[in-house]
Length: 111
Image 1: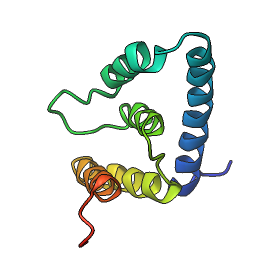
Image 2: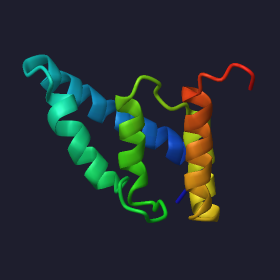
Image 3: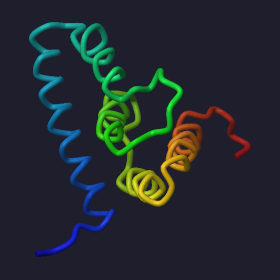
């Protein structure tokens, strides 16, 4: 039996998130506003974003889907780095995710 690497796991999580996004897009095409009104709130609850708790492996797939719902989809490298940080040190994953999101969303062009 083979063992999955973190890169393979990140690729798998991105593939699952893409298929979930395709389903959400299909529903959105039938009912405009579905993603913003219904889906995002439920995925945020599943990701436990509003709770002041460290990120866990159980929350991670929902957080990847949330990033897919945003304007900038996560890269495999960013997901791999966050997954490695989460597996090595559960408290460090939040810092890696925050710095990756900050650099992607930052308007500061001096960095």
